[in-house]
Length: 86
Image (cartoon, rainbow, N blue to C red; front, side):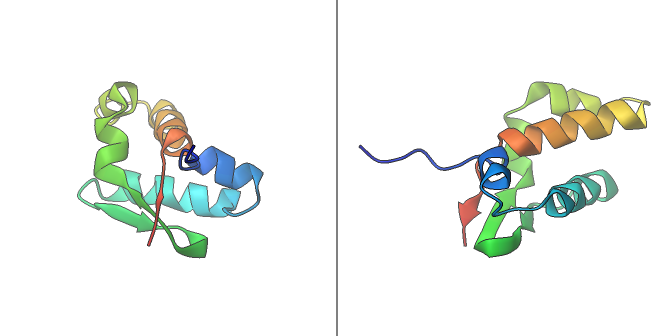
């Protein structure tokens, strides 16, 4: 049986992606919502549009006036996302 693609969290646990790379991805989303993808290290690319589109709480947080809440929910969505090799 084929393995499911790893989540960003799984890649972080395997030390394939650093906390700094995850923080940078969060910063990119918060700075420019039109950014479609973010290149992680080791050739992994995260599709921000899909990540936020499949996580309603994170999408709702983008309209909130609470910066810390927004950052936490975006980071959680990114940690649960499945980046692709590319």
